[in-house]
Image (cartoon, rainbow, N blue to C red; front, top):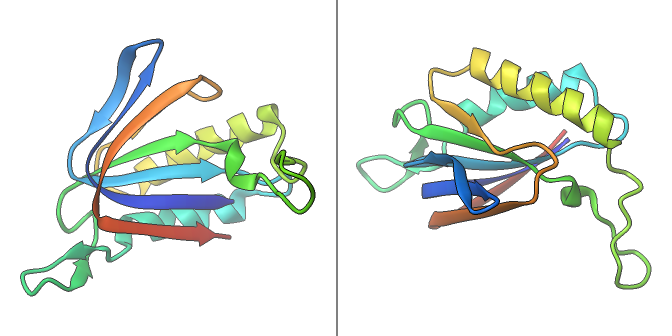
Length: 146
């Protein structure tokens, strides 16, 4: 399981020209699943993300979590996080979970994340062609893998 986490001032997801989710200050989480991911990875990520200290305190140090600032979380599935370019220029997705498996893992991850945070958790639409807009605050981008 791989997550690219961006600290944002705002972020939104559009499908077919219509906004399906948006957040203000918080975290945009792009999540991809590997073919051998299981419950262990989901629980670890769901525990870690709400408490990541990536927001500035009064002294300008990254000491606060999305929980501390009462922010929001937007989770977007992105199988391309497991694209590999060892050969050629066209990515191979052989390590990515199948769509059916990824859907199940994604649903479990959202449920687990919601159970571990008081922050609103919003989502994109799994397997939809989405336009994701964001204002990366900092910029701050963290990559987590488990």
